[in-house]
Image (tube, rainbow over the protein chains, first blue to last red):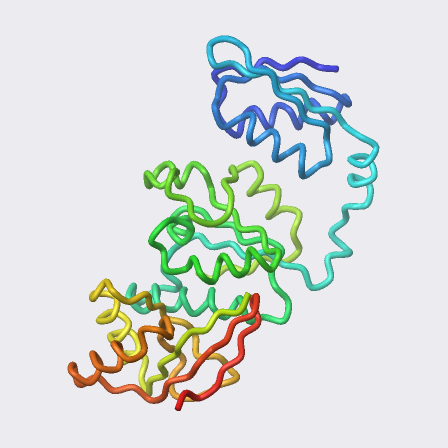
Length: 197
Length: 88
Protein backbone atom coordinates (compact mmCIF):
# COMPACT_ATOMS: atom_id res chain seq x y z
CA UNK A 1 0.00 0.00 0.00
CA UNK A 2 1.36 3.36 -1.01
CA UNK A 3 0.22 6.75 0.30
CA UNK A 4 0.22 9.70 -2.08
CA UNK A 5 -0.09 13.33 -1.17
CA UNK A 6 -1.81 15.08 -4.08
CA UNK A 7 -2.98 18.16 -2.20
CA UNK A 8 -3.22 21.27 -4.40
CA UNK A 9 -2.62 19.13 -7.49
CA UNK A 10 -5.31 19.70 -10.09
CA UNK A 11 -6.76 17.21 -12.46
CA UNK A 12 -5.38 15.12 -14.11
CA UNK A 13 -2.26 15.12 -11.87
CA UNK A 14 -3.82 13.02 -9.05
CA UNK A 15 -4.88 10.37 -11.55
CA UNK A 16 -1.45 10.21 -13.13
CA UNK A 17 0.12 9.88 -9.67
CA UNK A 18 -2.33 7.13 -8.72
CA UNK A 19 -1.73 5.19 -11.93
CA UNK A 20 2.01 5.45 -11.57
CA UNK A 21 1.83 4.07 -8.04
CA UNK A 22 -0.52 1.26 -9.07
CA UNK A 23 2.16 -0.04 -11.42
CA UNK A 24 4.27 -0.96 -8.41
CA UNK A 25 1.66 -1.76 -5.79
CA UNK A 26 -1.86 -3.17 -5.50
CA UNK A 27 -3.34 -0.48 -3.30
CA UNK A 28 -2.98 3.29 -3.04
CA UNK A 29 -4.34 5.95 -0.75
CA UNK A 30 -4.47 9.40 -2.32
CA UNK A 31 -5.03 12.60 -0.40
CA UNK A 32 -6.62 15.26 -2.64
CA UNK A 33 -8.42 18.58 -2.38
CA UNK A 34 -9.41 19.17 -6.01
CA UNK A 35 -13.21 18.76 -6.23
CA UNK A 36 -12.99 16.86 -9.48
CA UNK A 37 -10.37 14.39 -8.29
CA UNK A 38 -12.57 11.90 -6.36
CA UNK A 39 -14.98 11.71 -9.30
CA UNK A 40 -12.18 11.18 -11.81
CA UNK A 41 -10.49 8.59 -9.63
CA UNK A 42 -13.85 6.81 -9.38
CA UNK A 43 -13.95 6.69 -13.17
CA UNK A 44 -10.48 5.21 -13.27
CA UNK A 45 -11.61 2.61 -10.71
CA UNK A 46 -14.73 1.73 -12.73
CA UNK A 47 -12.75 1.43 -15.92
CA UNK A 48 -10.05 -0.78 -14.41
CA UNK A 49 -12.36 -2.67 -12.01
CA UNK A 50 -10.50 -1.41 -8.93
CA UNK A 51 -12.20 -1.21 -5.53
CA UNK A 52 -12.91 2.42 -4.73
CA UNK A 53 -13.46 4.20 -1.45
CA UNK A 54 -13.56 7.88 -0.51
CA UNK A 55 -13.55 9.54 2.89
CA UNK A 56 -14.26 13.22 3.41
CA UNK A 57 -11.78 14.96 5.66
CA UNK A 58 -11.42 18.53 6.93
CA UNK A 59 -10.72 21.57 4.75
CA UNK A 60 -12.33 20.04 1.69
CA UNK A 61 -9.84 17.20 1.63
CA UNK A 62 -10.67 13.70 0.47
CA UNK A 63 -8.88 10.44 1.05
CA UNK A 64 -9.44 8.12 -1.89
CA UNK A 65 -8.43 4.47 -1.78
CA UNK A 66 -7.97 2.40 -4.92
CA UNK A 67 -7.36 -1.33 -4.67
CA UNK A 68 -6.73 -3.84 -7.44
CA UNK A 69 -9.09 -6.81 -7.65
CA UNK A 70 -8.89 -10.20 -9.29
CA UNK A 71 -11.05 -8.85 -12.09
CA UNK A 72 -8.71 -5.90 -12.73
CA UNK A 73 -5.76 -8.29 -13.03
CA UNK A 74 -7.61 -10.38 -15.63
CA UNK A 75 -8.65 -7.28 -17.49
CA UNK A 76 -5.08 -5.98 -17.70
CA UNK A 77 -3.95 -9.23 -19.27
CA UNK A 78 -6.75 -9.59 -21.80
CA UNK A 79 -6.76 -6.01 -23.07
CA UNK A 80 -4.98 -6.00 -26.38
CA UNK A 81 -5.10 -3.82 -29.46
CA UNK A 82 -5.40 -6.85 -31.70
CA UNK A 83 -8.91 -7.97 -30.91
CA UNK A 84 -10.80 -4.73 -31.52
CA UNK A 85 -12.47 -5.88 -34.74
CA UNK A 86 -14.69 -3.14 -36.13
CA UNK A 87 -14.46 -1.03 -33.00
CA UNK A 88 -13.73 2.67 -33.30
CA UNK A 89 -14.12 5.87 -31.37
CA UNK A 90 -15.14 9.28 -32.66
CA UNK A 91 -13.27 12.39 -31.59
CA UNK A 92 -15.03 15.71 -32.12
CA UNK A 93 -12.72 18.66 -31.53
CA UNK A 94 -14.75 21.45 -33.11
CA UNK A 95 -18.29 22.52 -33.84
CA UNK A 96 -17.31 23.19 -37.45
CA UNK A 97 -16.43 20.37 -39.85
CA UNK A 98 -13.72 21.12 -42.37
CA UNK A 99 -12.23 24.39 -43.55
CA UNK A 100 -13.45 26.84 -46.16
CA UNK A 101 -16.79 28.11 -44.92
CA UNK A 102 -17.93 28.09 -41.30
CA UNK A 103 -21.68 28.07 -42.03
CA UNK A 104 -21.22 25.08 -44.29
CA UNK A 105 -18.90 23.51 -41.70
CA UNK A 106 -21.48 23.78 -38.91
CA UNK A 107 -24.11 22.16 -41.08
CA UNK A 108 -21.73 19.46 -42.24
CA UNK A 109 -21.07 18.50 -38.64
CA UNK A 110 -24.83 18.10 -38.10
CA UNK A 111 -24.82 15.79 -41.09
CA UNK A 112 -21.87 13.89 -39.68
CA UNK A 113 -23.53 13.22 -36.32
CA UNK A 114 -26.89 12.28 -37.84
CA UNK A 115 -25.14 9.90 -40.24
CA UNK A 116 -23.25 8.41 -37.34
CA UNK A 117 -26.57 7.29 -35.83
CA UNK A 118 -27.29 5.35 -39.01
CA UNK A 119 -24.05 3.39 -39.25
CA UNK A 120 -24.19 -0.40 -39.10
CA UNK A 121 -21.41 -0.29 -36.52
CA UNK A 122 -21.71 2.42 -33.90
CA UNK A 123 -18.63 3.85 -32.20
CA UNK A 124 -17.72 2.70 -28.69
CA UNK A 125 -17.22 6.27 -27.58
CA UNK A 126 -17.58 9.84 -28.69
CA UNK A 127 -14.98 12.15 -27.16
CA UNK A 128 -15.49 15.89 -27.39
CA UNK A 129 -12.95 18.57 -26.63
CA UNK A 130 -12.34 22.23 -27.36
CA UNK A 131 -15.24 23.52 -29.52
CA UNK A 132 -16.60 19.98 -29.66
CA UNK A 133 -18.02 20.26 -26.13
CA UNK A 134 -20.57 22.79 -27.43
CA UNK A 135 -22.45 19.84 -28.90
CA UNK A 136 -23.12 18.44 -25.44
CA UNK A 137 -24.79 21.35 -23.68
CA UNK A 138 -28.31 22.68 -23.19
CA UNK A 139 -29.67 24.35 -26.30
CA UNK A 140 -27.43 22.36 -28.64
CA UNK A 141 -29.36 20.91 -31.55
CA UNK A 142 -27.20 17.78 -31.49
CA UNK A 143 -28.89 16.49 -28.35
CA UNK A 144 -31.51 14.30 -30.08
CA UNK A 145 -28.87 12.38 -32.02
CA UNK A 146 -26.37 12.20 -29.18
CA UNK A 147 -28.99 10.96 -26.73
CA UNK A 148 -30.09 8.29 -29.20
CA UNK A 149 -26.47 7.18 -29.56
CA UNK A 150 -26.08 7.12 -25.80
CA UNK A 151 -29.22 5.00 -25.46
CA UNK A 152 -27.74 2.63 -28.02
CA UNK A 153 -24.73 2.12 -25.75
CA UNK A 154 -22.27 4.71 -27.09
CA UNK A 155 -20.35 6.46 -24.31
CA UNK A 156 -20.43 10.21 -24.88
CA UNK A 157 -17.78 12.22 -23.06
CA UNK A 158 -16.73 15.86 -22.88
CA UNK A 159 -13.48 17.38 -21.67
CA UNK A 160 -14.12 19.02 -18.28
CA UNK A 161 -11.48 21.72 -18.69
CA UNK A 162 -13.05 22.72 -22.01
CA UNK A 163 -16.59 22.94 -20.59
CA UNK A 164 -15.14 25.00 -17.79
CA UNK A 165 -13.33 27.31 -20.24
CA UNK A 166 -16.56 28.03 -22.13
CA UNK A 167 -18.45 28.40 -18.82
CA UNK A 168 -20.64 25.45 -19.79
CA UNK A 169 -19.87 23.03 -16.99
CA UNK A 170 -23.34 23.26 -15.41
CA UNK A 171 -25.03 23.13 -18.81
CA UNK A 172 -23.98 19.61 -19.77
CA UNK A 173 -27.10 17.97 -21.23
CA UNK A 174 -25.74 14.71 -22.60
CA UNK A 175 -22.76 12.54 -21.76
CA UNK A 176 -20.31 12.67 -18.88
CA UNK A 177 -17.26 14.75 -18.02
CA UNK A 178 -13.81 13.33 -18.60
CA UNK A 179 -10.24 14.60 -18.31
CA UNK A 180 -7.17 14.84 -20.51
CA UNK A 181 -5.49 11.85 -18.93
CA UNK A 182 -8.43 9.62 -19.83
CA UNK A 183 -8.75 11.17 -23.28
CA UNK A 184 -5.12 10.40 -24.09
CA UNK A 185 -5.51 6.91 -22.69
CA UNK A 186 -8.67 6.19 -24.69
CA UNK A 187 -7.08 7.49 -27.88
CA UNK A 188 -3.88 5.54 -27.28
CA UNK A 189 -5.76 2.28 -26.68
CA UNK A 190 -7.82 2.50 -29.85
CA UNK A 191 -6.77 1.25 -33.25
CA UNK A 192 -9.19 3.47 -35.09
CA UNK A 193 -10.19 7.02 -34.37
CA UNK A 194 -12.68 8.81 -36.61
CA UNK A 195 -12.42 12.58 -36.55
CA UNK A 196 -14.61 15.00 -38.51
CA UNK A 197 -12.20 17.89 -38.92
CA UNK B 1 -39.56 4.25 -27.85
CA UNK B 2 -40.82 5.34 -31.23
CA UNK B 3 -40.31 8.92 -32.40
CA UNK B 4 -41.77 10.53 -35.46
CA UNK B 5 -40.24 13.48 -37.28
CA UNK B 6 -40.46 15.27 -40.60
CA UNK B 7 -37.74 15.74 -43.19
CA UNK B 8 -37.59 18.36 -45.91
CA UNK B 9 -35.36 17.67 -48.90
CA UNK B 10 -33.99 20.33 -51.24
CA UNK B 11 -32.36 20.53 -54.62
CA UNK B 12 -29.45 22.67 -53.41
CA UNK B 13 -27.32 22.86 -50.25
CA UNK B 14 -27.93 26.62 -50.02
CA UNK B 15 -31.70 26.12 -49.92
CA UNK B 16 -31.33 23.57 -47.15
CA UNK B 17 -29.08 25.79 -45.01
CA UNK B 18 -31.08 28.99 -45.52
CA UNK B 19 -34.40 27.25 -44.80
CA UNK B 20 -32.98 25.76 -41.61
CA UNK B 21 -31.69 29.17 -40.55
CA UNK B 22 -35.00 30.85 -41.23
CA UNK B 23 -36.87 28.21 -39.23
CA UNK B 24 -34.43 28.44 -36.34
CA UNK B 25 -34.69 32.22 -36.27
CA UNK B 26 -38.43 31.88 -35.59
CA UNK B 27 -37.58 30.23 -32.26
CA UNK B 28 -40.84 28.28 -32.23
CA UNK B 29 -39.43 25.40 -34.28
CA UNK B 30 -36.83 22.85 -33.33
CA UNK B 31 -35.02 21.98 -36.54
CA UNK B 32 -31.70 20.52 -37.49
CA UNK B 33 -29.66 19.93 -40.62
CA UNK B 34 -28.98 16.28 -41.25
CA UNK B 35 -27.33 14.43 -44.13
CA UNK B 36 -30.01 13.26 -46.52
CA UNK B 37 -30.27 9.55 -45.70
CA UNK B 38 -28.99 7.16 -48.35
CA UNK B 39 -32.34 5.37 -48.21
CA UNK B 40 -33.99 8.47 -49.67
CA UNK B 41 -31.19 9.52 -52.00
CA UNK B 42 -33.16 12.42 -53.40
CA UNK B 43 -32.04 16.00 -53.97
CA UNK B 44 -28.93 17.40 -52.38
CA UNK B 45 -26.90 16.01 -49.50
CA UNK B 46 -28.57 18.06 -46.77
CA UNK B 47 -32.07 17.90 -45.36
CA UNK B 48 -33.90 19.73 -42.60
CA UNK B 49 -35.34 17.65 -39.80
CA UNK B 50 -38.31 19.05 -37.87
CA UNK B 51 -40.93 18.02 -35.34
CA UNK B 52 -43.72 16.45 -37.33
CA UNK B 53 -46.33 18.31 -35.29
CA UNK B 54 -44.95 21.59 -36.71
CA UNK B 55 -45.49 20.50 -40.30
CA UNK B 56 -48.48 22.72 -41.12
CA UNK B 57 -46.94 25.82 -39.56
CA UNK B 58 -43.65 25.22 -41.35
CA UNK B 59 -45.30 24.67 -44.72
CA UNK B 60 -47.27 27.88 -44.31
CA UNK B 61 -44.13 29.82 -43.44
CA UNK B 62 -42.23 28.40 -46.42
CA UNK B 63 -45.13 29.33 -48.72
CA UNK B 64 -45.29 32.86 -47.26
CA UNK B 65 -41.54 33.29 -47.71
CA UNK B 66 -41.68 31.73 -51.16
CA UNK B 67 -39.03 29.15 -50.29
CA UNK B 68 -38.60 26.06 -52.43
CA UNK B 69 -38.16 22.53 -51.22
CA UNK B 70 -38.24 19.21 -52.95
CA UNK B 71 -40.17 16.70 -50.84
CA UNK B 72 -41.38 15.94 -47.36
CA UNK B 73 -40.65 12.62 -45.70
CA UNK B 74 -41.84 11.16 -42.43
CA UNK B 75 -39.11 9.50 -40.42
CA UNK B 76 -39.78 6.99 -37.67
CA UNK B 77 -37.00 6.45 -35.21
CA UNK B 78 -36.82 3.37 -33.01
CA UNK B 79 -33.62 3.63 -30.99
CA UNK B 80 -31.02 4.57 -33.59
CA UNK B 81 -32.87 2.84 -36.44
CA UNK B 82 -34.82 5.16 -38.69
CA UNK B 83 -37.20 4.41 -41.55
CA UNK B 84 -38.48 7.01 -44.02
CA UNK B 85 -41.62 7.29 -46.08
CA UNK B 86 -42.73 9.96 -48.50
CA UNK B 87 -45.33 12.13 -46.79
CA UNK B 88 -48.63 12.62 -48.61
